[in-house]
Image (cartoon, rainbow, N blue to C red; front, side, top):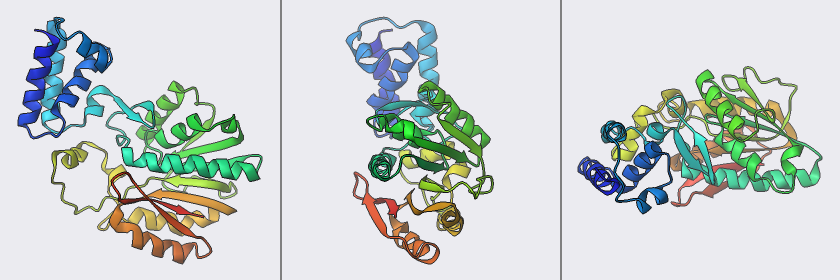
Length: 291
């Protein structure tokens, strides 16, 4: 069977299941199995595919029909122009989180105009995509002037983050800490900058579209933040002030509907800080900057 025929059968099956990007999903899955880029795959449309590759493709399509994220089938996810290893131990990096990375790079550049070195904490690091993308894209050798700690409640997530750090030659540049929020973070270690993409999905939220339902495959501990999705952030804001330098900055990712509640938490626990909200590409309030 040719590449073109296999892709058509796969995309037809995904379309019948109501998935939003059936052709793209089929191409990504098959190109990963064949070990080539999507462009290379399409250039060789008339090439024959061996039986083993066809069988694996069929298995992956069946898993995708059941709404398993493509990233878990390929163990790859693009984020901020980098490719990260992912599996079921971590959330798949989201495009909306790139807003935080872009803002964080600007903030760290600014901090380093005022200090020789910046101490940076990424809490709830998951795959490590946020600190790794920041470190990779900092200009003019500024990455050498940043001390990074990345923490997570999940040992499995930290194992994945270390794989990604190793893939980008950063394993010695990031200190990984297994910690439930600040429990294992040294209070004597004050941070100039903190990013946190903590669980914020409300437990009772109804997932309607196939894309939304696919989160059932992702780790609950990284997704759900209690009834309103704010439990983890409440605990975070109760403690974070003790770990900041006097001018320390914070960036957190939230759901659009939580912006007001987060504002109230900051007013209560960090009354001397100013808040700015950044919207994602879809126009939703996504990143809260506290400085």
